[in-house]
Structure formats: structure tokens, C-alpha cells
Length: 206
Image: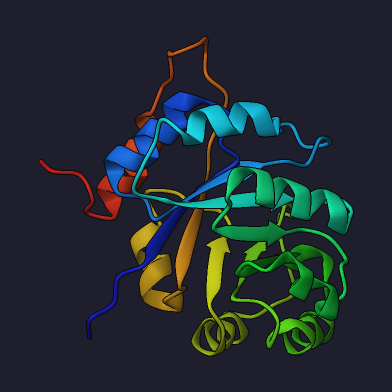
């Protein structure tokens, strides 16, 4: 079977991560515009970084922000895709005018609530980004397989080089979400963890 998972590097707040994503052939670069998030980046700084990179779809990542703030930033930066971690109603998403990724904390939802969220948003969004900060969740392996087979699922649940091939083979998600991180100082960044993940995916040349 011809299957190749796509990759998203999210929470980018520095040029080093953006250049890494472009050079590694990562499909989506995500910039976090939620001011309450540790990886927040201003639209002005994001614009400067975006101008230096090519080859990736640009994703604007939002938290509990107003629809007007979201559309203003999307228009200013010429964003390709919008990721939302908020409670905007399905019909409100049409005003954004871009493909939408709905981010869902699966650790905070019962199986019934998660499936209801899928049904509510399925016709309005392009993909669902599943993540959790909890150490456990109630959803079974079979349920997660079904979600990945039914919807475009971006997998953001505990990715490690040691388990990434098993996880992909088990669930076959549409894409994986890898989180960027801060530079040690401007222009200086340790990419060992990212390189280990890409190596495990067979994306690095020997």
C-alpha cells in the first residue's frame, strides 16, 4: 500500500526552526499567535520568518481569540491553513476563508464527547489535530484507528523516535505534529531530537 504520512512542525517562533522545516521537506510550518502560549510569536516577527522560507504550507495556530483577530492575521500574512484550539461554532469558520484544522485535547473528552465533536465539525474543517497533555485518556486503540480511517487526523500524541514507526503503522494518521522549541540563543539551536524523529521516519540521508 502506498502510504506516506505528512509532517507539521508547529509552535515555530524562530528562523532556525523554519529553515530546518523547509530544508527537511516538512509539509506544514505552524506559527502560534495565541499570546497566552509559551511559543507565541508576533505577526510581525512571523512575517519576517515566512519571507525567508519557501516550500511549506504556512499554518496560523490560534487559541481562544476572536474571529476578527483571526481573520486580520490571516489576511495580513497570507496564511495557507488555520488551526483553531477554541470554541468557535462550525458556521463561524466559514468567515475565515481558509482550510481549517480543529485542535482537540482528547484527554479532556469522553469518547462520546469526542465523537460528537467530530460529527459537529466534520463538514466545516479539513482536518483534526489530536493532542493531550494528560498521561492517559479513555479512548481505545480501536477507536483511534477508526478516527484515523474516517477523518484526516493530525497526530500530536506523544511522538518519540522509538515508537514513531509503530504508531504510524498502527493508526495511519494523515499527518504528524512535531513541536518546535526556543533557540538557545539567536541562530543557535539543537536539532538532535528532531533529527532523531526524521531519521526514524527514514527522511534523513545516511
